[in-house]
Length: 406
Image: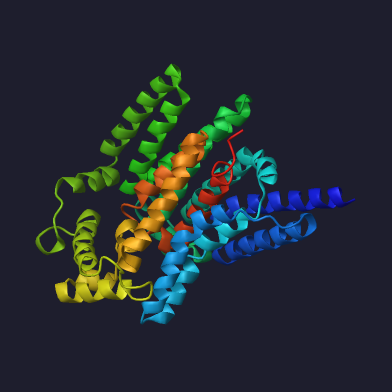
């Protein structure tokens, strides 16, 4: 009876992990419910089967949150500090949760990996397609949708609202997962369905026209092809890359975004483009980092320091936008100095080393994707980014960090 009860609670835990992978399509308030249900089910299961805790897994993957949390001690804006730490709490919750799952159960859970990947792919597909069809049917012409849809998703979808940059990241990671799902399929019908969903997400990627996720996707797709060591796949890859570049050049929105990179200059002397905005912000951030490289400014004050610099610079656009650093590595230095950046790099590095050692391809690609995307976005400080980074890092790392891939 005890084994049957523990089996049921483990199955319930597997279901809850599936719900976590479905979070892209869940409204904001239900995402927290899904995480809470996962934690409650995990604790119930541990009561049934006995407590297991991998302290090294927890320390490795929660270290960056712990270092950031310590900067609360020298933050003056404690209200903002609490808000940011709450947003970043996935960096503590998921390491703690997955450190409570012993290796034998990880192996059982991991057998459902492709189902989880499909759940995420389907969730991202629905997150893009359903609003597009709804607003096209009720509000806009097709031509208007091509222009306004990114803004619609950011401001008009209520509890499903999401910035196009994070939609692009979802699409990119879903495409990566799609490649791994296809590897295990033999049914032509299922393959056709997955390919249709993936092609649709590629089209949405071009609609959002976000350079960072697109370049990160090309990088991980290249590595994926190299991992497979199949000549036929290389030919498909070459055709796909040529088509990808051709679409970038043919579609005005994406062409303009990439052409911006030919003329990078500060806002005060150049055009107002997303590239120039970031370049100006990076100059400001680097100046601030140089003034407090050892300790940073604390999780409560780092954005205020940026705002003060924007005021001194006298740029109305930056002042009104109150932009963050738009670079996770710079932002970590602003928050906690060298200690915060080192904690993050060590976390990423250790996970990457074990992923390579035990041939955990998917974790390698996820880490590289986020590592590149973080060059242009503060992923750890936005709910739409940090939840999924925390989930994917700890789910995939639980299979390789201290247990051989099998």
